[in-house]
Image (tube, rainbow, N blue to C red; front, side, top):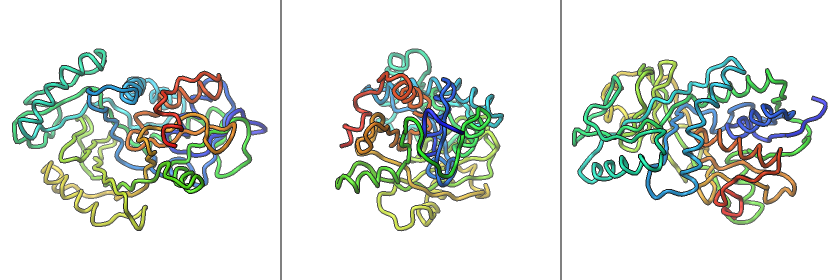
Length: 345
């Protein structure tokens, strides 16, 4: 590419989604990442696009709702453009209700979802949830929401990459910065910023997950005992993940994952004999404010940042890409104040 209007540093889901949205608006785009597409946390295996609970409403939850509602069209366009699947499916989520307190909270959320989710999705309390497999519930009751969706993170990054390449974008391991620059460098970028500013701006939180040979592709994802159990469209099921602040080897699995697998098999006995296809570990970027960090870069004058999508990065990506394209290409700022870098400084 002789010139580019936009350079994105980082080929995780934020970087690739922003590149795709900018390209669709007519910008010439290049993406630079030494590891290639989805090399970091975005190359994981879980892919639970789960909403925050519909209560104590704030800008973060409203932004996430907008993004989750955009996701179906967003990923369908990516798949059509690149010819590869993202694994996206809005299949909902089932949660067993463990006691009377959990049932009371769930019934309250059933009512608040009617107002806050604007009729686009429901949160229901029921005794017979959908799906072929159902985890045991001490109360016999479950919460089921129709907003939760799933995708396969690794497949989604490859689908975005394919769409970008077919559209003429350069996705490369290195290169000169051209045009407007967006830093979407994940945990490494947050750690570097913290070091340069000599205070915590954000960090990497280690997560571990496993992929099992268990086919429940038409069923909803499950949330039980703090675990996400996510049936993928390719006939595998992912379980995860841990949240580890202290670790020696960020990319290595250990006994914590084995305990996670055992917990999943206890919570859902159908998984007891499922073979483990893959074990995964990596660092997920967490900003100090816990919200995505979007806007003008606090260290690089005239450049931009999109980082910190801890646990919700794939669910937030369609809307993050939209507001970053607005800012960079049109100089229109639609970013919530709590997402701007100043909130983490």
